[in-house]
Amino acid sequence: MLFGLAVDDTVHLLWSQTPNASVNRALRYNALRSGAALTATTLMLCLSVITLALSDLQANQEIALLLSAGMALALAMDLTLLPATVSLMRHRSPQSEQ
Image 1 (cartoon, helix red, strand yellow):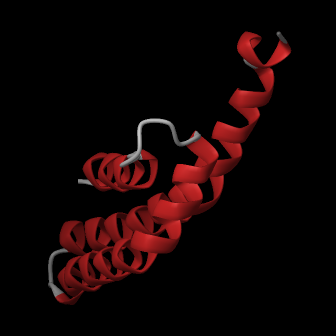
Image 2 (image 1 turned 180 degrees about the vertical axis):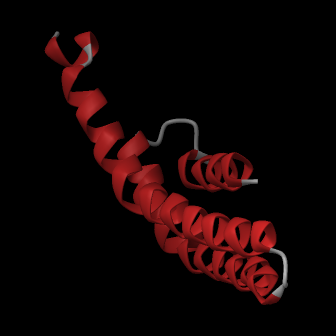
Image 3 (image 1 turned 60 degrees about the horizontal axis):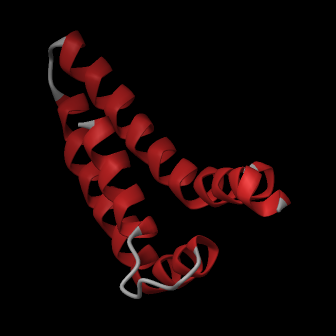
């Protein structure tokens, strides 16, 4: 579930509607356009999963805490680390040195 959410959010942030748009421009545009929806979806999923913490089973309580923390961390990484990684990769790519 965590990988699915992280990959889905990453695709939403990287997908470009215009073929000539740079990756940085697409990230900025998509973050402004769909950042609120990604955050709301993640928040709703976290709140839904955290209800498992009300269970009497310790396994359910632990998985609820781990999954909700993991989903929040995945969103934070998509909104912060993804743009930084893309920018770093663009600066280090051989194409940018030519």
